[in-house]
Length: 277
Ligand code: KIV
Ligand code: NA
Image 1: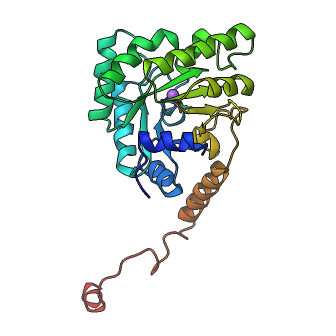
Image 2 (image 1 turned 60 degrees about the horizontal axis):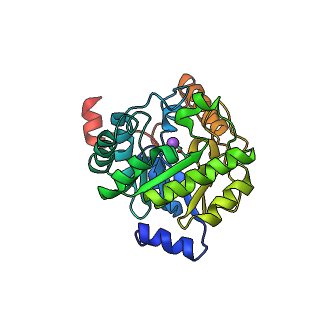
Image 3 (image 1 turned 30 degrees about the vertical axis):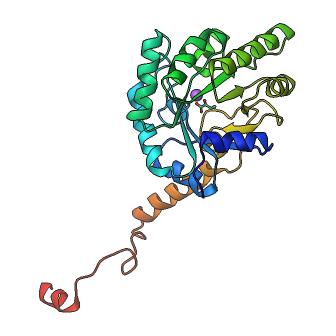
């Protein structure tokens, strides 16, 4: 498979070919995305919740994000690798934002960074893009600031709120985002934004008319124990399979049915065994 680049993503967009983005958090999940031919792999800060067990994404650090990003990079070949800048990494000032974006590329081995926020973040997006790092925007439900949004809830349901989202999208495009994630908003609003901007929109809970889709892998695989958002389809139910395997393992160890002599074991050469006995 040929390497997915910013240019290749632009081409998919202009050809009207939907872009499939998926989150990955470590080497095996990255390799799985790669084998499936996913176009974009996202090291989402959702890993704070689904991989690290935090209640929300606000506590994950740059160092933790880079640690996961490096692991994903080792498993990613053709897919285009985007890593989230965590809460705090681009909020203080522009210098900080650029430094952290550069670290995510140099130490985290990301090809692009994603950050949450619309028109209030154009100065950051602009500075990072001008430092030579592609930026993916993220508007609508922005989990890092879910507290101030009043929880994990759909955005842009009123005409005024929808207009704000359109303004955010246009501002992000002007600032130089090469793509933007639209999270949890009415399909009609996402469709309007997709029509108004010239860069691909990647939807999650934003309907079927965006330029692409993204899901959190743990949600779509059925391995996150807390909740599955309405917009997620469970493409697999891995948790029951994992539970069954672990219970079977424990049972077989207790019953000395595992390991099986001759099957999972090593033997000495016959001569050595004779002398040993
Ligand atoms: O952190 C994440 O997984 C994300 C996607 C849901 C877009 O930002
Ligand atoms: Na995220």
